[in-house]
Length: 367
Image (tube, rainbow, N blue to C red; front, side):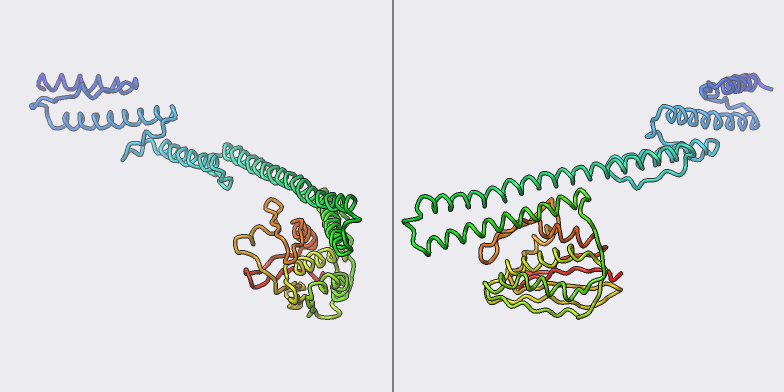
């Protein structure tokens, strides 16, 4: 054995001892003399490769332990497969955490044992918290809208009433009969608007606090609609509006007649309000579909702009417009309709096109 081979074996021994201690060094094996035999060279190459893989593995595991996930695992090194899997899991978990931070609470962890259970419970808690926050925002919006309606829709007609009453009081003798009647008519219309607003506010507030009674009974839907048309016939006659009905007779439904009457009256009142003189209104039905009765209130009125349709039935975006004879609205009528139909597990929606009238449709289950 040559002197160089002896020195090489000593170097290999030193590297082996360093490797065992966890302090490997490849420098001891570089470079190998030319007269070193093949078996010793093969041993040196194997030990060099082992040392290299050990260093790569150690660096990766230390980086992983420090949370440095950007340090990627060494390739072609299966001795640390579990740590590679852990690195992959942590990368995925980091991505999921970022998605959760963006509001995606549908993420689930299933690869980390007991930690997954705790993590998923945390996500569920965050999801519930988010729902509560959304409900709180919705509640605050409703409250703000409530006070906004009171402030605007009560103040305006009261100011009008007080103004006309003051004129009647101060100038009664100087006014002719037609002027007096005109002022009294203004006062009457404003008072009627205030009365309707108060009724709607009371109904809405009772639905929000679950204090409105729900008393479903069996009754004839045709007769109920006919009665409500009769109640509003005088308002329609003033504008020479024709109201027709094409609802099947003798259909018995199980519902709260007071609530359904409120829905029908609101929809009919709106139809009269937004239909010009000599227009037409039809209360119709497609009959029974999937064990539900379908009822619609159609008018030949001004219709609704496409961008305003999504605002209907939402308290946060209550939309009101002036009728064809300057009739005023509260914006709460359709909100109440939706609440009452929802109580019956039904649906309500609108189909309309500006200048071509509107059709409000609601469904009620027969059972």
